[in-house]
Image 1: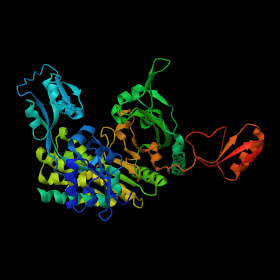
Image 2: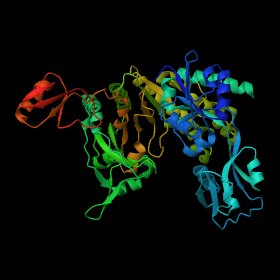
Image 3: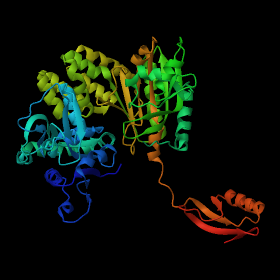
Image 4: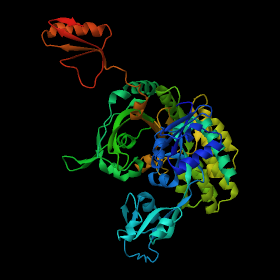
Length: 212
Length: 365
């Protein structure tokens, strides 16, 4: 284990927001804000090393110990169920995992419901809890097209503002769960770097509470 | 679907140290065959980590399995005895962790103690688990919990059956934000919810952790589990690297009482897991207690040093003219401590500190 806390952040808007939060908590690394294509940034004084990865890969980096801690969306954690500690709800990137479809959809429980989604496990778990038989159709993008073209009856997808749904004549039919960014930790790193990880978590928690 | 079969040599050194340790405590070696009737695993499926088992039909028509686990075989194939059965093993098991990763050969070493277990026996197994980790790495942590602590809390606080698995999962994640919300949704008292969050948070050296738990307003069932853990902690005084952490998870259908996971720096998951599994023994029809642990030798590959810059010191390119003289020369060189590879051409992908030719009985630099 190195003496620096390795932190995996998601690339993109969420990563920028999370970095700003961590900077306020006292873990700034000015190089992060410089334009360029670097992926790894180190702030020796603050004892942290940041690296930016694809949002869906953060949990893998943390679970496999390449990062001590990281920030991943709850959607990713529910879908891939990595064996990590989930230490904090950062309250950033808030959105909802929803069931969406045509507003006038009449769900006939005698028929298997066709569900298109990128989040197969989340959808399967949700409908298992509901006791509903479903035909899951795994898609990788443009999920909204599926009910419009008759590929599926509904979709299970992330809804932020609902604009894309409205523009395509779709509506939220039900909420599966709320989503937000979570601070996660590798279980072994947590144990061997306990003082550093818990101090980091406590300072970030304070910032989250101040921001409320 | 790909399969991985690891190099057994990487784990040999570790096992020799473990073997010496287990023998010193009077454990004897248990050896098992590669196959077992599939029925054994079908009846105890949830005990097997992962869901897939390699099966084949034997010549007599029986459905057989490449063993996915050692413990079940140990219980099934050892006869009940008035004395304790203290066994250690090194075996390969075969299983697929999930639907995507393919089957793997997993090398395990470990020990099992079966019979009428008393506090000494439990303390001895925990001590051997700690000493096993110490034999692998000078830095280690052996986390312990007692399943009766969370289970007892659920009983004492009236947590509905349907919510216990979810709360246990959240405890396993140290996920206090969602656990707090679920406690409120379940209508638990503020005091009970506070105790549960304390249980989730707790991580401390074993005796300190026991003291911290003693200060909590636990109900009678959880307090009984704590009492057993406290007696174990006293018996274990002087054993280093023991921590109390209630985030450890284990199937309560098989495990009961003390559960432990061992960790070393550089390996991102537990390298050792085990605990008390009377439930499994009873399920297999024996009236006995049991405790043991397994060490996943495959994971120790991550601790191996990085490969050196060279595969051998010297590459000797031979023209085949005088094999006897060549062999004599190679034996001289290796006796002087050099690693020598003889070949007719430079092998692809290998690196050597130096290269020489051997021709007409002479070494040509």
